[in-house]
Image (cartoon, rainbow, N blue to C red; front, side, top):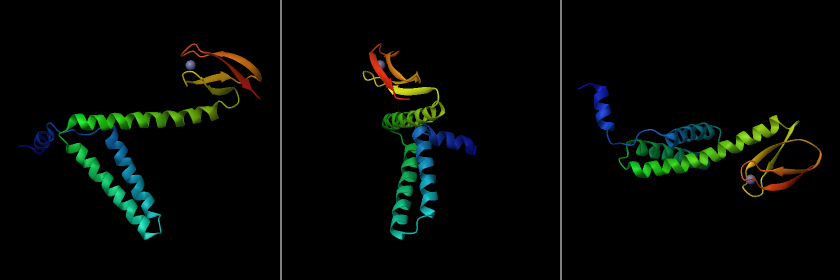
Amino acid sequence: MRFRDKIARFMWGRYGIDGLYYGLFISYFVLIVVQRFIKVDFIKAIISLVALALLIFMFFRVFSRNIAARRKENEKFMRIWTRTKNFFVLQKNKIRDIKNFTYKKCPACKAALRLPRKKGKHNVVCPKCRNRFEVKNWF
Ligand SMILES: [Zn+2]
């Protein structure tokens, strides 16, 4: 039997790689790099231990046969990751558009709305939930 076939046979019914795998992998790497710049031995040891735990968890998940549980973990992680990513994209867009647009949250559905930056009071209709509300721009 070829080596590749042996691996394929070993991985049969096991969970494998997903978004959380990459998240753990990157976190592990970041911790290893950060740990190198820390001078206090005690804190350095804790960070190394956490990094090792992440690595073990990462491999445990890849070879796990409990696919339903691993899928659930990944869904949770991806939800948090998407929310975090969207937050940073919004901050980036706010800076990019600072001259011409203002960003407001709809008080009803919490959607982020990009509005033209015009001084004064304006009536706004949320395109997502049709809620009407007033917006004040100071500059
Ligand atoms: Zn709304």
